Image (cartoon, rainbow, N blue to C red):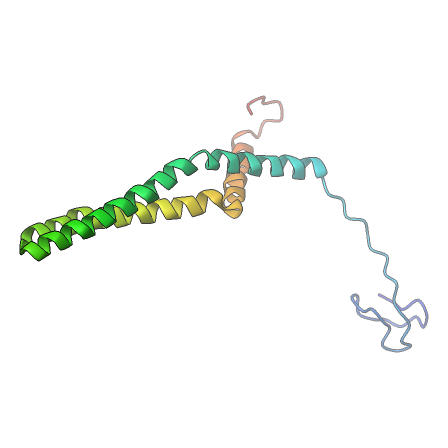
Length: 143
């Protein structure tokens, strides 16, 4: 790029000419954005998010049930330990506590993923890419 005042070559992103200190006015080329494609993609992401939100009650039930089972297992295991039944303590702790923690953790992770716009965007991009790969024929009406 050249300075309009002194004519010397200056860096493309310069705001002022380093030789004459004149403010550089840049003529930016207009950026064309296909708004229809952007709007369609945003709609696809919103549709993916709404589809994921339908599963929120299931994830919440998983979290509540897992937490309830865990609390129950701790109380039952402590009760058995106080009574001296160590074998029952181990069974309760091993067969109820561990699955309860896993159920709770899975519910939390799925809840976070379901509410993530970033994950929904990635899923919409994958669906769009798969559709483009399968429908290379311009006369194809499969959508």
